[in-house]
Image 1 (tube, rainbow, N blue to C red):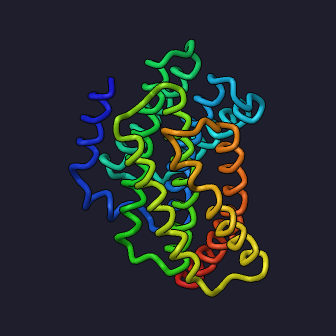
Image 2: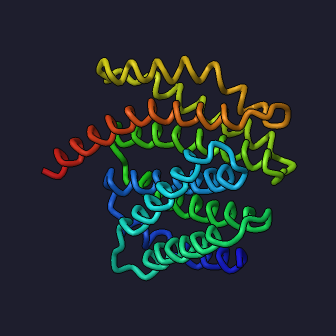
Length: 263
């Protein structure tokens, strides 16, 4: 089944230049693509937490909410007249249906692996759409929106690697993948720290992210040593709340910039 998805992606990537001219470079579309990245990882993460019976109320609610939001954002992607562009969005809808159906099946390590594969396919497709926006000379605010949303996606991805390893899906590259994810988060946080436009609320939340991140990132890096899934989940949730304040600020700022340019 996954091979069919890969072939589907290859077909949709044949006419990159055609799609690039069809997708509009709006902050709304960028945000949807970024959210799909994040929510694809959330679905896999909460699915594993739920079926490992860890923080069950939080996990079940997180799975339900992230699945609903993932579907909404896929349905909200811009669809023009270009057939390749339509095919890409249709692929994402098809993959979501397969994901949803597998979640409803009895839990097994095989089904958990399928869930991760489906979510990775959605992640790849969302990254492709986001990259198209990068070629449209985005504003500084839109770039900051991208950076902060990538921070959200990366911290959720780190959580996903952690719980997958604890659940028995032990990729031999898990430690390196986790290190790469942490390094990517550090790089984006460094860029955000250089931004000078924040008001008091955003500054406070950025300070919270810096302070808390410096204390907890070793929990993620301890993927092969420690077993603290509840602590890792709570830490992820706490960081996401603070980062989301920054995301909302840049979404509003980039939207204002686009309206000025359009007007």
